[in-house]
Image 1 (cartoon, one colour):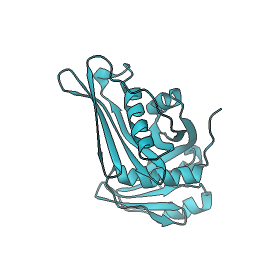
Image 2 (cartoon, rainbow, N blue to C red):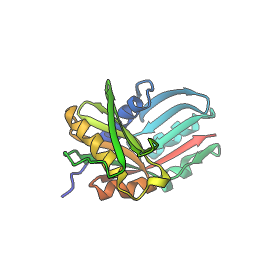
Image 3 (spheres, rainbow, N blue to C red):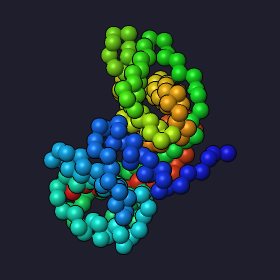
Image 4 (spheres, rainbow, N blue to C red):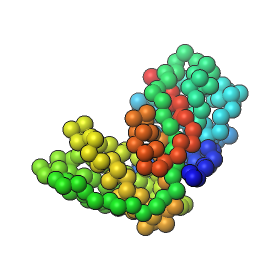
Length: 212
């Protein structure tokens, strides 16, 4: 039986971990959740609503007009989109997911070399082919017993070979070694299928939007 996870604390843990994996400023608590300063014009700041409230969301989005402002809300697009003014552009669906971590076999398939490195609270895993070309990679941040997985990518020429599973297992094992017992991430539609297949639980849909 899958473990259940509450939306707000899971989203809060992901938000903190995401800033570590992306080397961004720590999130600042707000009545709706968190604000993150991103620091570049096309990605100026991000607002994360961890506990959906229509009135609070409407007030928040009405107050934001600067291009490069991003929003992530733990709710269905049908709940979020009607509350956004015309400058907001809703992005592809995303999914907040979590798992109780457990050690797993992490063996590179024939023809691939697995490597891992850790710096402070962040670990990186890579798989390269026999020519040294990057085939798959991923990153995880460890904080307060939670591991935030991010940037899990398998290059198109190497997909459908189980490389994503090897990367996830490698990062999970590293996280357990750093005393993490829960993993969190935000997945794309394509990524959700991989994570559910290896035991991750869907916690909440996530609606992303940006003022372009």
